Length: 459
Ligand code: GLU
Ligand code: MG
Image (cartoon, protein in one colour):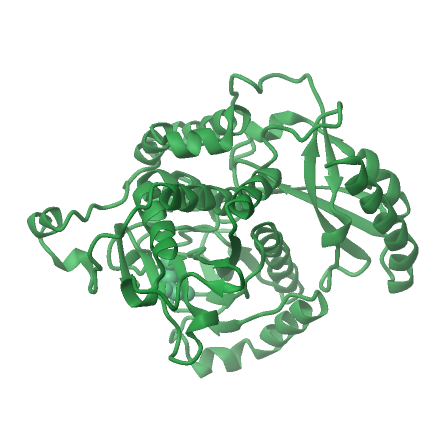
């Protein structure tokens, strides 16, 4: 962030500090998402916004190695109690929180005390990858889908879901319609466009799809929306779980990631001569993601619980293949309806979930896609049905492999991924993998029920 950007942020923060109290807002919640996928917060009175936009507030770097259970591990760069970071809220992303009266929210970037971007700042990583894409002439759009569970847990551990299905049913919508209305109104008040909302298939599960944004904006919106879902749920007496698996053996919560690549105002996933209208660059971007997917899942499906969700025939996309509208392929290509394809065509990564840090998931996906473009990769043949219905021999002959079935395997792949190691840089990469390994060790030998319970209310 150069001096001009700092001046611009200070100016905007000053205006907001004057305006927000008139809207009943007195406090600012500033969030970062750590390598454990937990959204951490510090708050200041809005009267201190200007100063905070300039000099930030302190946070110990040890949170980079914080795990889902709130224990800390360590990395070569981060260990022990010493050191401090500055969290600088981004005033241009401020939103008034609709379900937390008196509060505004802003995502923060992490800086060193010397005023430099901190090497492990996840939000800055996304920004860096978006800039890399822009330098290559591309404008990227990302949209996230959020699936979650609303429920209660009795003292004896019994789970009470907000609904018991049928999935996608009007019956469920009728049952939850006051809460659903409050959610939709809250999103509107926060300026979050919602593309769709529906009762999902699993017990207690609901879903919203968010419209496309620039990469950092998509991750910011994901954080805001999840905070809002949690706050609205609490007002109606329900707890929220974004954990990949709430009840072992059941369909889990996905965090599907949609994206499109644009150049000179044109969507490179349509209007071309490649598969289903992809342009050459669009196809290469998709092929780059497919090639890195066995490593990318360590970033996009990064918890031990992720691997309880990533099982075949659960619409989680556990095979490294692609297909048009194939919900069992890790990469689903969405063309949209004829007439809308120029804007609608997009690529969906289905295997990701919401234990992921959205900044990292988006940034790493960009790095993989751009690598595919640089190497002019082509997609293999499309897969049009459920890979799990084919024999291992057939899959082998088609070159289709299952994605890693454990976090430890995914992390090994990540460590071998030159693309992602280079893109993340040592401080981020080492702290991220330290957390993944720490969690893998923490839950080694635990049964699915224990793993689900330990993750259920954490994200
Ligand atoms: N809940 C499924 C998952 O774990 C996804 C269902 C859908 O395709 O929307 O990803
Ligand atoms: Mg869904």
